[in-house]
Length: 267
Image (tube, rainbow, N blue to C red; front, side, top):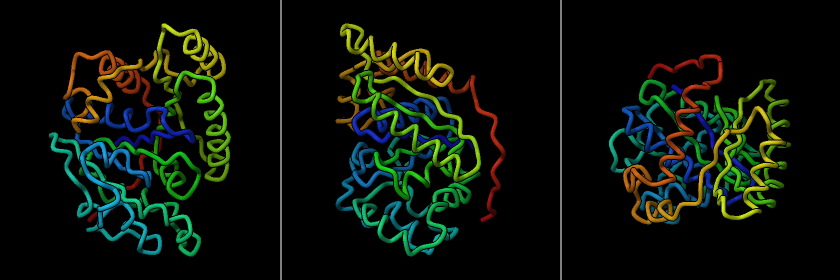
């Protein structure tokens, strides 16, 4: 199993689109894919036509067992997207209460790692959508993942937000005593504007060696696919955005980080 987290401490940079874009392409290639929505706003959950305000069963339930995860629970919470080999663990707005609750719960930072361990033989890839704030949910994603993707909009304020995310990443790696491979993914690129072109140039200079050589373009088909509740490749396989995510996926497959094999848990 490969476990990827998509994170940035700035919202609106394309995290959910990246999760769904890559997840849809992986499923199309025959891989079994689980997406996990760790954001209390539930953008990924909403994408697939579920209301985070109304769900009574979600990722939140995984955190209600004093840091442990019952063997049966993860599979009971999984929902189908309606697309073959593509499932997700939904978020509900109750996730926003976790920060206060986690203080009194030991082991809360490893709940998602334990969840994934129970599902190890069920899926080939896990992709996590994360909240734009540092807290127990983002810590869970960073603890569980093998590869971190950092989407960043090609504009100045988003680049400043990435600097904050990098400080968080360094802090987490130091506390966990491990290196976490990461890749900066430029998004919402518009080659017609000098601001976007200049921002991409700055990103490449600043994160040389940790940045995807290409960029995800602005593409209105992403918004159309979201409205239809379909992965971009299912909605419009010939769009510029799908071509870009296909290129990103190929890059990721050819540059797999060397990671220690995590232990499975026998159910």
